[in-house]
Amino acid sequence: MTHQTHRVLRRLAAAGAIVLFAAGGVSADEGASYVVLASTVPAFRVGELIDDAMRLEIPQGGALTLIDAVGKIKVIEGPFLGRLRSDADDDAEPSFLIDLANIIAEADTADVALGMGRTADTALGVSPWLIAFDASLAGDLCVSPEGQLLFARTESDLPDVTAVRFAVVDGSAAVDVAWHPDDTLLRWPSELPAVDGQAYVLDYGAAPRPPEVTMHLTPADLQSDSHIAVWLARNGCTGQAEAMARRLALGG
Image (cartoon, rainbow, N blue to C red):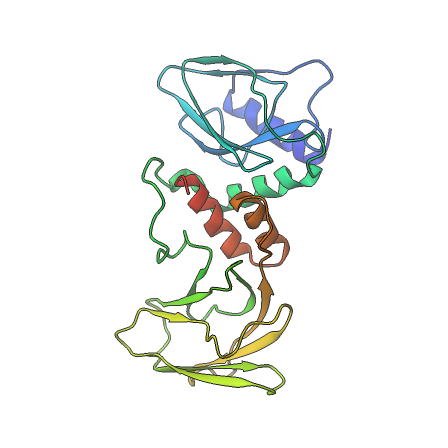
């Protein structure tokens, strides 16, 4: 068993999960088929890896929302006793579910209400393509497969921003964009298309040193939103990956 598997099994045991393991044990690298996306059963925590060889018992009134390696979401409602089978191919990337589990656990999707449907794309913390424009803005940013990225004003220690200069870090190109105080959102300017791996400076005229961001273009051929979440995390856009996980928990 891997270290990740031991950690997961210890947490399940500590929580008192009613789980019977098949002979031979569980391998997170080879046997994990699901990640817990949401749970009303205390024995199963958000971000746990579930093996398809396990027999799960979910009591009356309980529900477990799982996501598999192809991005398919399955809701299991109690009473339930049995094993689950995933539609994922046997040759699915072994580390994918582990990475997805870590994202979901960090995103704390347990606090996201299920059954509400997809929230508006202007919801901070739920839309991966909406970034808070505040003092923490720096590092890696990922653009949607459609080439979209929005910034949102937040209540922060920043002064009122009325204009932003988007510039390539070497000064080879720049675009000035007015941001009216009544406008909540600001779009990355189409006049300065983001280039994959390129560093940019976002100068709003107040910071001693304007924030520098490195842009990444999300591929359009990723299999599902869960695959997008993993790609975002692997490319340094962890906050955006966690937002995608919350979106998934909303049924999105």
